[in-house]
Length: 238
Image (cartoon, rainbow, N blue to C red):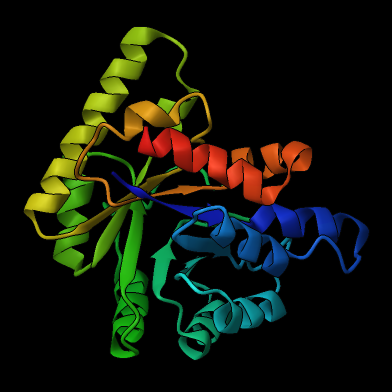
């Protein structure tokens, strides 16, 4: 059974919409832990559209589970990560103007900057995860680069409506997860998962952790953060 890491970025999105002091992503993270989350995920973006450096510092000293920092390869963000020392640094592609992360890292091109960032993080004893599409080639390249974990992109699966397409994507995810485990990598998964599609993902026994944000935050607007997380945890356990 995978554990749940809750992404609280969009609590900060609500706050930044008014440039106010609330809602507080740190308070949301604490409630998520009370609801059964085993980790908290945040993405500190270059444009600071939601999570701010101050949030990250307070989360690092406040939460009781583990902190997963999603990040691009910007020099300033890297320096912050090396100072904060999250429990896991998940490297993701980041493009100016994107609404959300669009696909996994492209590991087929020159990866000199990626290698440099990974080396600096690992020197600081920060485990590194690479957000990748669920293909054998991406898994093998992540392993060759020295990643500790991969996070499999579940976006195509989550957006699929046709039964055959869903089955195909689940098969791809299961194959990538099995290969990653065989190579000794930790396996996380996330992107677009919600209360309607999470249960099938949980059947892939090699997945250690699911990272879920938007659907939980959306539900929390109606029933509260702790309750929204409890509902997701029940689905995962079931």
